[in-house]
Image 1: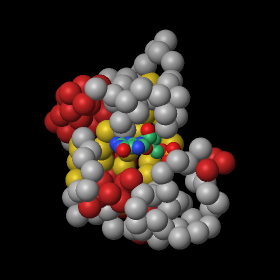
Image 2: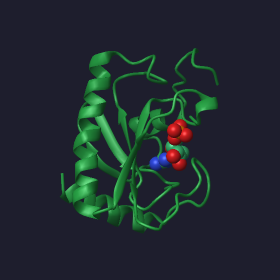
Image 3: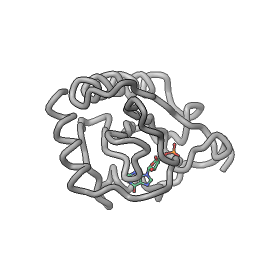
Image 4: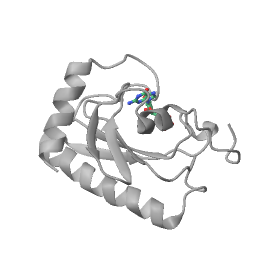
Length: 144
Ligand code: 5GP
């Protein structure tokens, strides 16, 4: 998908926002949602999205909405750091399929990294165990 186009209301994150499919949530308010990535590249991999901005990527989103998302990223990444005590944290955000984007609702990845532990593939691979994801989400949420 190119960088230009129409927001698809049927994308998977729009369905999560509407409650049509489940997600393991960490934090939610009227404007943002943080939840666990079901194909984690590393233990604790989570995502932050706007619940209100119908933006596919960085070029679609209003500056104020992006600010709201990034404030949530700052808050959740801090909680990831405090609760999981990784050795590093990667923050990524992809724009357009050639850049690696697979879900076209703007989102920011928070990926804890651990010394000597490799990163799993992006957007594919093994689906995480739901109980593990829930336990990790609870730990992160407790540190918010
Ligand atoms: P992108 O490739 O667009 O930057 O990232 C999309 C992310 O969404 C990937 O890391 C992928 O693992 C994750 N993902 C795909 N489908 C689902 C889903 O149904 N639920 C959750 N929680 N994450 C998903």
